[in-house]
Length: 366
Image 1 (spheres, rainbow, N blue to C red):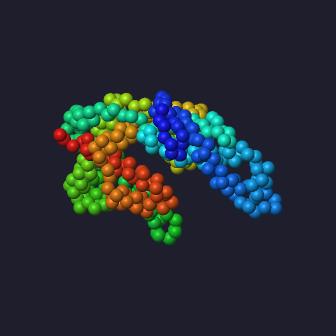
Image 2 (image 1 turned 90 degrees about the vertical axis):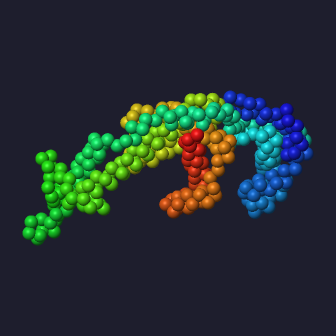
Image 3 (image 1 turned 45 degrees about the vertical axis):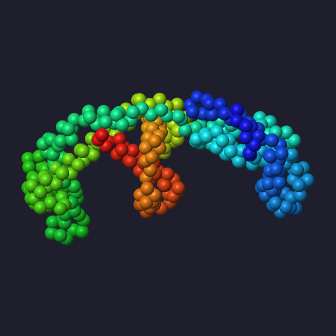
């Protein structure tokens, strides 16, 4: 039990499952009753009465209308805010989310008693994350990043196929008819399958290519870089999976719900881009949103755990993105999303940059 005479009288903290804590405490009457004047002012400004301007209702008239208990409840709410802050500071609680507050005793001339439940950032005993990352790196197969002849040829075939399916406007015979013929047309040599032959003339229509050899060389470089990036992302997924598998976390439900809400919002945006309403999708799938959120839950839990682990590694290794880099990215995002909330964008950027720096740290060869 922690005894402090600040904005509260006493408080005890009990740990619950899923990284929640339960705080029971009290605020002495001489502390919380100091908020009476402010409570009366707040209520006065929110109440309308015929014959009185807002904020100018006499106290006896106001009390006759709303009752003493309404004043006490407003006083309690005002007193609990600074008391809660003092309690979490005094007990070194790293809280997340909104507290659930229950007033257990509210009477004039008596201590105000309360109970608060709130989630906290879970304690994380990190594994040997450097060794886990290096183990995954060591299991990489150098052959996986090499580009094969088949991959190049298949890509070239897709490019030729896309070119043959493009509809090119062509003047009708004689040039007298203003209507255009939009049948697929390719002016040049085609093979037996109707695909453009790979010639210097053809590749010049695709962009900044001088010849077939130039096209193949640049395409090979592009595909190699793409494949290397894909393999790099796969490696990071394996590292993240290994970190999660080797770390025990009493995951707060609020973090899971937050991730589920993010997934749901993105999913809704994606299907609306296809001109499908969420309710129509659910009806067709014969599912409720609760069913789908249940399917998403394992992924949401994993994402929340990964972020907690990366945050913990960043704190331990003192990995922090510079203000210059953060501001640069924030400005870049706001240029494209002018209505976005700057503070939210900054939090997002800080998280993304920190995550990238942590992975770069883990990927360094020892």
